[in-house]
Length: 366
Image (cartoon, rainbow, N blue to C red; front, side, top):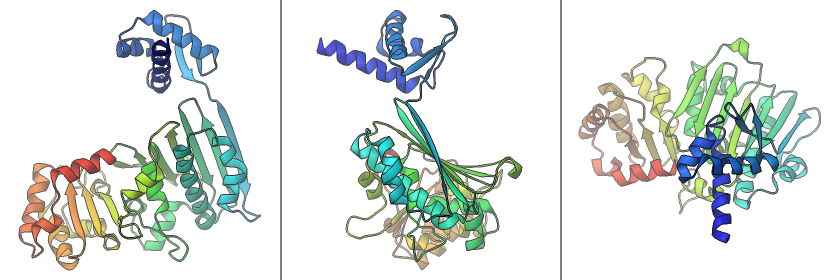
């Protein structure tokens, strides 16, 4: 009996996890996955509707299912009174999420306090709005302010030519416009903890998905946005991830501090641009001297020019011998250019080279 009950729980959990992707054919998908009849799946769907986890719409032939929000909450915090992120977490947010597993609650504690603190210290706006949407499988949070957009502020502080350059710097981590009060780790680490992490600000949209080696920049008309910054975070309610595990990927065991970064090289390319010049390489290299190990992720980059490769893997490598440079996800064309630059470098190749095992381990973690 216990085995039958456990299998039923597995089936219902699978339905809840997949229904958003398959609202109209979830019965077929679940039946094929568990090798059972659609009639058997229909009984599980009926139970989930009765318990309020799913809603159903349409007749039998065209019926669609969707998750029912277990909880929706939002609150606007005005900036005309002092705000502390931990106080807001303790008084409002924790109570909403308190039934989640401890490791999941810890991730939300880290992510919320980091993003809310950024809005307090950097936006200069009149309000911060927090919205939480919780279902049986996931929790989503939106933190939005009406202040100076994050990419515009980074662009101004670092004197960058384009707000898209700000996204590349944000993706590297260790970036702050207020170094006396911030280490610049919050956004990077939070983006790696969440299942999905999106930042939208005045026409530029940055997104990172857990397990996807690529970060993305999208652009829209500025008039479609208001002022300020919006941050969306989504996390599976029963993930096995931990704050310690994610932070440990980027902080060395024997030293305190954020010592490793992953540079998504693709973000340096706009439209159909090819990565050919030294100036593009210098854009990729900006601030990487702050780290002990730099992983250059070439996923989505088919080829690079000899000057681009030479600037990173010969010129920079010679000038920063204490920094390990690791290229991963290389095509044959990219690898040929990187190897060519390394052969011309006076830095021993084995100090900078990555092994296939190391590259695979990184991809599994991401």
